[in-house]
Structure formats: C-alpha cells, structure tokens
Length: 325
Image 1 (cartoon, rainbow, N blue to C red):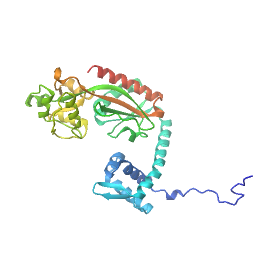
Image 2 (cartoon, rainbow, N blue to C red):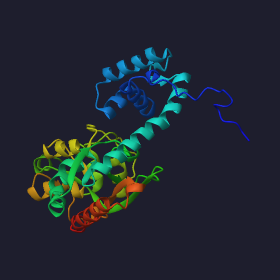
Image 3 (tube, rainbow, N blue to C red):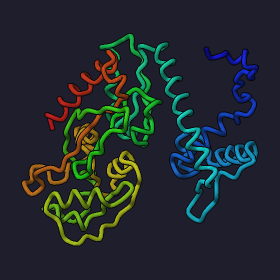
Image 4 (cartoon, rainbow, N blue to C red):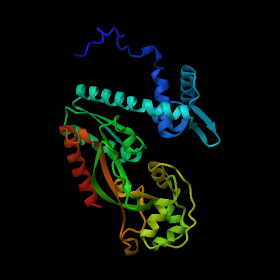
C-alpha cells in the first residue's frame, strides 16, 4: 500500500508566496500592450493615459528584473522573455476576468451592459433604449460606446452591437461567442441642403467623384459604394478622414461635404431636413449598397432570459425602421 506524504517524510506542497505577484495594474497594462500591440492602444482600451501605461511597464520590469518590452521605430515589441511571460499569465488573466464577471452577474440579474459603436449609441440607441426600459422597468441598462471588436470585450459586456458593410467578409465569431443578424439596412450618400445648393450638380453616382467626399479611417467605404453603383474607373479619392462615423455625419450636417451613412443612423436627420439623401428617387442610385447589424454575446449567456428578451426587442425595433426605409 502506498504510504502517505507524511509517512514518507516529504514536505507538504507550498504554493508560491503571494508576495511574488506584481501589482495587478502593472499586469493589466502589460497584458493589454501584449494583446493590442502598442502602448497607445492599451491606454485607450484601459481608459488610461499612455504615460501611465509606460510607468506600469517599467514597474513590472523592475519587479521581475527582466526586460519585457523593446522600443522600436514602429512602436513597442515584446522581448522573448516578454512573450513567454505573457503566454503564461494570459490564461490566468482570462480566468480572473471570467470568474469576476460570473460573480458580478450573480449579483446583477437585472443589469444589462450593452456596447456598440459611438455613432449607433448616440444617434440610435440612446434615443430608443428608454422604450425597452419602459417595457422592463426592473432592468438597469448600462450603455457603453466603443470602437473595439466584440471579442475584445467578451468578458466585459453582455451584448455587443456592430454594423458590417456587405463588402466586408463576415468573420466567424471568436470561440465562446455567438452572434445573430438583426437587420439589413441601406447605406446612403447624404449632404446638407446648403452644400448641395453650392456644389456641382449630381445626376449619377459617378458625379460624386468630383464632390468633397467625407471619409472615416480610409477611402475603402466610398470606393466600394461607388463600385456597387457601377463606378469602376481608377479612382483617386480625396477628402478629409474623420475616423468615426458620427464625426463624418456631423461634418455632413455642417456642410463640409458628402458622407456615407447607414439609413438607420441618418433617418432622424433626413426627417428634420438637416441632411438630404443624394440621388433619392433617381434610378441611377439603385440598388442600394447594404450593411448588416449584428448582435454578439457570450455563448454561455446567449439564451439567458434578459439577453433573449433584449434580442427580440432589438430585432423588432430595428426591423420596423429598416422596413420603412
């Protein structure tokens, strides 16, 4: 019969001292830099100044006595020690996050955390989420505008809502996530009446190439929209890049040029007259380019009563507006 550890006079297992664990803020900063590929990206993700992230990295290097980050002309890169260390702590960080969220959720059965793009949050969700609250007075809604991809917020939110243009390939959801298409909506060209009154006439989509076009972070959206309307020539697109959809929308409202926006976001501005749909009623501007709204959630929470209730409300509300387009 096998003898016990005590009978063999072997020392009992002693876990590493908790004093060897570095400050958690330093670990969070290092993890974010390693995952996102840069100090500034990590700072935006954690809501900190980039100088604070740099100090946390220095603290971690001093604590461990190892060089974890190298500065390069293109930014920062992990050293071999840094890559190995991150591989070893990443799963622990994920486990801590997942366990903490699970614990929090047990205390907040009626708390729903929703993340979506800033433009959708400002121009659509914030105006309508009160409808859901009236139908569900016991539910507390937390709405967070963010530009990150859904998988980055897997353990930090209940629901992510994203708009994907039809020309972009729809990626498979990350492991542990589930998604559903909730609405298909047209992408339209819009401008202020003031801008259109002073601009050259627009009879076909090709005439837009000579206009002042407003862009987000690149020229691809306009290039694909024009291609969908038969404009395939070699294009040398120009115009200001404003990086976020709600900023291009605001620029269009103030007469700075022509923007592309999905109909659900533009609808209220079209109704008020602040914007005009370019080519409305003109067959040359048909068919519309389209995009899809998707709702993401953790697979293990997808069918919880509150998330299921919200999904049904969102599909119904978006669908009614999209069908009226």
